[in-house]
Length: 498
Image (cartoon, rainbow, N blue to C red; front, side, top):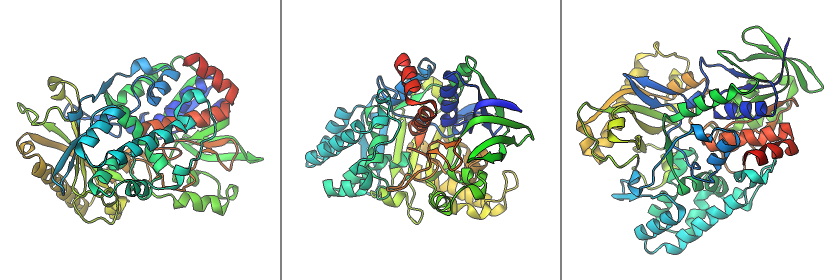
């Protein structure tokens, strides 16, 4: 059998991070990806020569000394990534339709505080306390500072109180509550279900800076590809693990691949959905409590997506806005509730590059969606979907368009829809259980699947393990990776890099 030091399953940002980290430690790593190409939801696609992002659209943490910038520097990738910062307030706009209000959020925590106080002159104290609490949580979370070199996650009091509770205690202004919880769309959990601590860990990066990246998620994929050339990394696409064999003393000795080949490894790190991990483990090697815990995880929100472009010769009616969020309800709990029957939210994402370049760039339009809306067709495949599904999809496209046009009428004459995708599209394309955008919901009090599994040389990482999004996924791999490598060795690599 061919022998590796480590096998990494899944080539999203977490799997790529884990592979590079372990190979930088001088180890031989096999990276397995079920899809025909690496990158998962990072990978772009094109329609009629126009490029669109699948899952990665923008991020925080790329400013100097930001957590994502530090992660990339540690891995030797920072120079490969060219951020395009949304520095002007007009770039990031929130429309609260029920109140008839539009808000622009600038970059920088102090700038946001100043802007919020201008919008809500009687709520200065609440705004100061909210920002102070958010900063406090992040300063007391060691994993958000790479140089802390902490292996175990820290639990704070704020991990046991919801964002909704904190906001209601701070202010009775429902519009301010809605605006402060608006970034819940970026992690897909209702404010009443997410802890204030996890909300803070995710949104402070957005308050400090928001950036798109030149060439989108492909820039990250290409950067990892280049770095892999310097180390002992073998990448196999269209390949997965079909059997865990020769299990002795709770360790897997032999891994049978979907190709029929058998390989050996000291450890295997699974960066795939927790429910896919549960399917892989032999039933006699985990407890009923473990199975119940993983089965109880709820999927995060997904998106019904439209991929659009400006018509030839047309100019953008609001060219300075890169992120436009349309919230028909002030209460974000409603907008992220599967039982909600009102008009869904819509997020419009445009490239912040120059107008000439934008003619070659797609416009991504996202509407929150839930798997129950398409579950009736879950066994169908693209190209063979029944008429009822096609009618559902066409109707939803028209509804989203009219929602946009009612708020920004000038788009009616210049926006062309090239294609659309439901959660079934993402389910099939990304080989995920349900096409959700952020894996499992990071709900308050939940014990996520991270680190060592019931089989002791198997580990779990990924965006479902720690925090959703690119930062959470990378951090999960760094935390699990240093547990595998050992604190001392990891610390030496860290000091050398940073």
